[in-house]
Length: 447
Image (cartoon, rainbow, N blue to C red; front, side):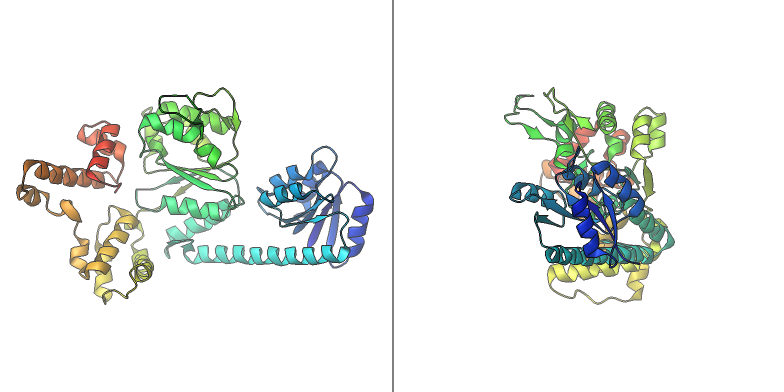
């Protein structure tokens, strides 16, 4: 079946000349304005669009930006008036494959279309390969041969092509951030930025300014105007990690931004339009948080356009050999050597270990094994947490003993609560912000 070529031009003579030049090698459909072109795009799914910039009503740039977010993206060649270099540059930045200035030679147009078709075919091949790899257990940097992960990858590959908001659920260390990055990379927004914010890593007072930005003079120390994450991610994807830890007041503002498509900077009175794909993630049970009044139900419904659950490593132990092989290859490149020799019994020990920290903990243990050459030592908790009472008692002074004990105690408690700062703080009788400050002081990263 020949490729479909959509010609969007308000001049019938120009459309006729293109039709004569390309039929019957291509199937040519026509539109004289943006509104008509939208209908043709939906009905015909063209491989290439020849788009005139100067159109009645809405100009071609409006349609070009819309095409960039379409589920099936055609290659766009922009047609501009002679001397419109500024428009051509703007079109290329907006995602056009190439541009031609009127009057153009038909041979030049044929060559440009042929190259565009080659690019589209290559892109289709890459997309098909990605889909087959997802079915075989690979999704970007993530791997998993078991049924749960293959099903997850196939679903993620399908929803990546849409603009639906996503909610990623799973324990700490299961790879929610990697999944979000790969979904963005496979989306129509891949040319734009992927901007992430860990909602639990910042004090409540800073989350709002990070998300929405601020105007000069909005608060003490605001010496310049600064855009927030929503603006920085314009046209791309914003990833809100650990959204279950977000304060209710900030949740309300996120909901308003998602519903209205606009935000206001702190200290500002002007609405700023935003265009982002929203991916959120949490290791919390949001339905329980809703019942307890800690999370807004209306925001949950907005976030959960599609919900994807990442299984803990304990539910996918068959993937451990595959993961170890991947980590080992990465470590060879990182350290420039082959690492110690190991046999099947080593993998059996890894498969039987509990792994409360999931893939993140496994990766850390494999690196210790690679460096130390001792699997038993690698499977022991690292640093001060290995034997806190003995190390604290042997410390040279009280301050050092106190530091060792606090580090070991908080590391263990964080591990018991899956790395969730909010739950850990509640369990040990601290405010979340106090625990975050203590973790920073002691150099404890999230488990």
